Image 1 (spheres, rainbow, N blue to C red):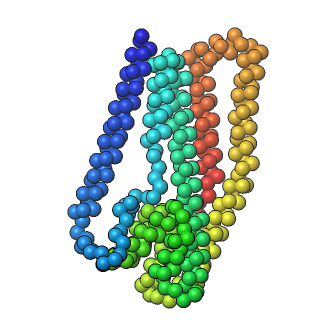
Image 2 (cartoon, rainbow, N blue to C red; image 1 turned 90 degrees about the vertical axis):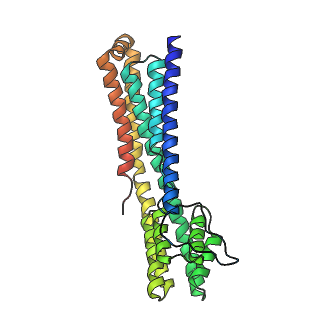
Length: 294
């Protein structure tokens, strides 16, 4: 009965935390909408026959965002469940929650990096299409329209947003800066800078975009090479971790009684929990060290 009451209490605490997080998120969204509606920027009425601007984006919010608080909430839930429901020692309840938070945060970071790598790869293909259209005698808007038609998510909505705002009379420099804020990568900064400079001073855009596209492809190739070269290191880390658990299993099999006493003691539980936590930190550190920075 006590376990059930404690489990219900832990679930109620977790639910309250989730409700508070949702309420704060909605309040932040409403505040951002009010600020945008109350801005001093003059309203631009779209010309007849033009498409309205997309309301899917916010200039200051990246198209892919991290959810840093979700893994730690899951880790808190795991710790509460282990401590109140399963009656485990504090070390065996706290450490798994920390591990869930660390590993979950790293997985969320990897998700964001994969999305950014995908849109960078699509940008290189779109630039090739734009260069071909420009060399054939088309204008910048026509070239971007061609690239937007051939692109897929997540790049296609970004290009469509840029085209829609320019057609409706927004300042092109502001539109290009907003693009770099929605897609915060060095490759999109190069792309937006090339478009902004061309819009101000003119000149041959095909040559500039060609160089930008070549630079983006070189960066993508370098990132893939670094990833392949660090695979051996990551495999070595995994092997060392597995060897640790293999040694623990051998010791358990040879002397089960002493191993149980060690795990049941306060010092033993904290030492084991700290060792497992260090392994999780090592996984995160290895992933961070193998990440390329320009």
